[in-house]
Amino acid sequence: DTGVSQDPRHKITKRGQNVTFRCDPISEHNRLYWYRQTLGQGPEFLTYFQNEAQLEKSRLLSDRFSAERPKGSFSTLEIQRTEQGDSAMYLCANGQLDQETQYFGPGTRLLVL
Amino acid sequence: AQSVTQLDSHVSVSEGTPVLLRCNYSSSYSPSLFWYVQHPNKGLQLLLKYTSAATLVKGINGFEAEFKKSETSFHLTKPSAHMSDAAEYFCVVSHPSNDYKLSFGAGTTVTVRA
Image 1 (tube, rainbow over the protein chains, first blue to last red):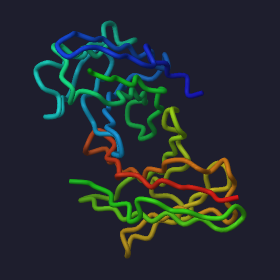
Image 2 (cartoon, rainbow over the protein chains, first blue to last red; image 1 turned 45 degrees about the vertical axis):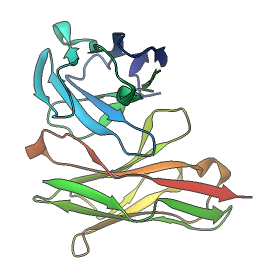
Image 3 (cartoon, one colour; image 1 turned 135 degrees about the vertical axis):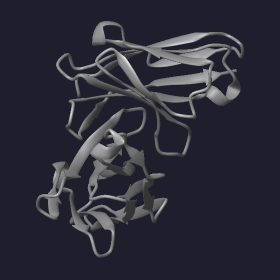
Image 4 (cartoon, chains in turn cyan, brown; image 1 turned 90 degrees about the vertical axis):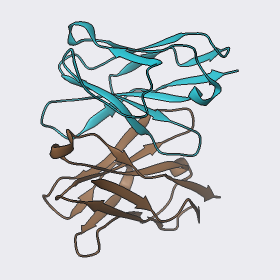
């Protein structure tokens, strides 16, 4: 157990619906990353925060995706108007500033029907 | 730019025999390198990491990896496979200039035969 939790663990939704995922990091770690992992592939970077500031968004993150980290604690990732191509595992990782190790949560597996 | 290539998509070994998972990296700078393991329906667990100290890195569960700059490789080994080693393994690279964003290989699936 890395101390990083994600909720829900599984989500099934219909195309066009909105979904929101939550990540609760290790409290003293100020960097939080989101990755997406599609079937048979390694995770790919989506976005990251340093405290409450979102510092970078991957080109993989279309305008239907939004992420927040209010008060530099937990983070949410919202997908609007879901598409079947959004089906994937969404992983949250936590790390310390200027330290390379990231600790991953168990992920949220999304299936869009 | 940074990337990793895992040379084998699938490795099958007998229990008690050695395991070798191959990884080559590409980086404009001296990178940090990691191996993560992912068991079915589980999150990613850090096995070991290299961060410019000793080139032979020991990790958890008997795994170790050797950083070879001349070959741009970071292969993962274990002397004797156990059934519980069956999982997906990812070689990963990062660097401070890239804000420690992780770049993953495509993964190697390990199966262990009884």
